[in-house]
Image (cartoon, helix red, strand yellow):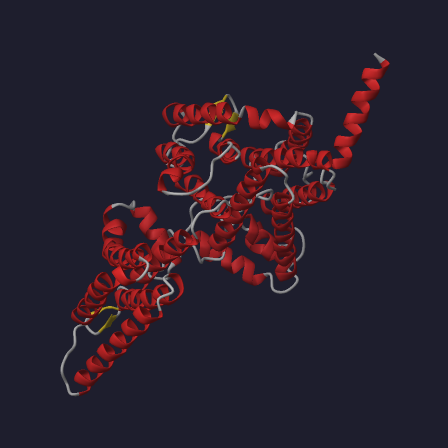
Length: 492
């Protein structure tokens, strides 16, 4: 018995020594800073204790304590169990998400919370861990690589299934988080062209909506810019992607000649309609490429042609999707974020007050518990999705910079952990966590400062709420447990 006890003690000591305590330290600093920010955002008098369980900060501190228990309990679980039960955990979470959509009450238009008396929990926050585990399990399967479109079916399905379930709950913000996992697919071999295409799609969407009211050559300026981009991208893809100097050169000469001709006719007083110009020049170049692609890399030239055609179709579909697919409140948020509309007393109130709060903080802030915007409750939901504006008002540019640096250090540390893994399972899981954190950080802060629509994304470790805090704690500490076995391979 003594021998077994000594072995267990030695194993526990090795585990404790192997845990990345620097990451744990960053985590502790962030959750405590978050609780203090919640206290500042929700308490009007310093006489009220921040640990009072009747206050938001008191509840947050209670959830932090429970998070420590959860986190360190996860460190004691054999890391092989996370891999062995990845699929069952994922399946159970999908079932819970579906059940939640039908049994949860309507809270601000969303059916995403399970209530147990006075206690509520949001399963979507924990489904991130299940999805990360399932993806990691898939990629660690012997012989699995992303090669050919058929190999994308299962990983994309693993990502989209919780998205559909969460959309069923009418929780769009939480559903969008899962699309960040495309960065994991890229790390594991997905063609970079897919990321390029997605970036173009987002850019086209913004351009078409933002500049719809201004005309150039008789067409909306947004469409003019998109069609110009399509022409530029065709040339760049021919030169860089297809590595065809001849096709790239000839198409460039054709575009320049057509532009000079249009400019000359316009100078002589001939009206040139933008659509007539673009839908003469671009189709002509496509026909030329279809003829010339048989002398070059067939697949790559054909991909270039398809990209151009799909880009144009997508451009014309933007207004259809915006006007007939998106809900009115989603349209309003996008219009306000893009500066198309101003609604300072309605849909844009939160963002406007948030920007005022951050701007009023100046370089060093007004001081802890001294924020006037905060104390007068000008910013609704300030302790949840808009907690960053409390930091900006009370701690100023210095405080917000410190928060961003902490996140940067944490994300870079997670990426470093990912790259030192000796298993595909550990590497993929780590990149899942990094991708989710990057998405949350980017969207939440972008939303608070008014450059992206308000979609209800909490700031990890800072925003009020047990589900969010526990969800990220579970994600992080499972990674720390997986990483702790690196000592078995002789790597510290």
